[in-house]
Length: 391
Image (cartoon, rainbow, N blue to C red; front, side, top):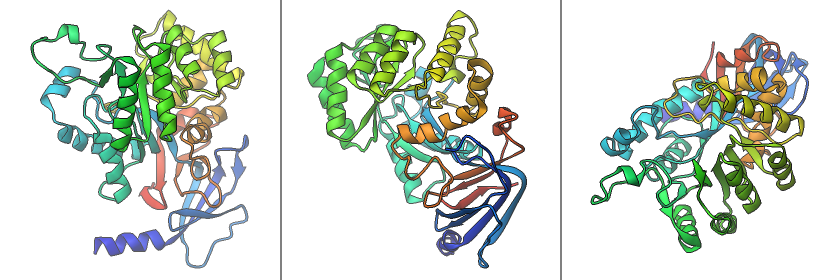
């Protein structure tokens, strides 16, 4: 009975009527859109209220339609609490079941796609979550999993020097030393189904050598995978960009020369401001300053929150971009739509409200270009043509 109902819902035609449309690509808000959805796809976008006779009309009066948003830096299996307790006391199965709750929260917040960049010691549980969503077992965003992540030996939590050296305890990532081990780790992770490689390009101080980073990126590219690099130090950022990573995560010591280098290499920057706003000071001021400069230089910026326990709304990140880093509201929205889709190489199917694209659509009351915080109160969510949330 449930399967029949689900199939019926999938085959149903919907007509979404709203006051405004932010389509993900245009720089302008468009008035009085009608978006027609059938079998998970957008089959028409018109502005004259043309509605098929068979369509179920969803009238979102007073609302603005937008593409489903993307958070491209999350840790579904992580916790904002005691890291070691979570790692040692909770099985990957327990943590995956907990992540289902986080996935539902993300969906209700309008996040229909996320990239999970390291399972924090839970193995390939994020790969399983992605498969479960794709199979329809659980409800959640599209997931791009990176599995274990790769770090230089001893350079990630829990720090080995703080542990009992006589016991072989687990760590939050896969440790490697030398180019051979780096290549082997990429191959192992690929064999387990990851769709991204997460590399810790530094950890407090620079760690991997240039040769090791290049080995990771080169092997990933052979296998059709992109690399996201955790990099905060200026040396780590530079080496990662020169190695050919797809994105820099965090990037606390970005500067003018590194912005120029990233532009030359076509590198994306995922600044994860949400994770740092709790610690105001000179470092945060510097990040805001160079994020503004990167934006003015037209470096591709993508929204990522570093979310673990989902104790804040992900779209708070966009508020920081607008209020503290000087992005326009429209360009802030593009960091979570057009830019994020380009990063993930899904720009031909997601990130826009456009005929032929997957029907991942959200709506908020009012105009978010006048108040970016409206995106923290999403009223309507549709993923692949299925209504998840409505007013």
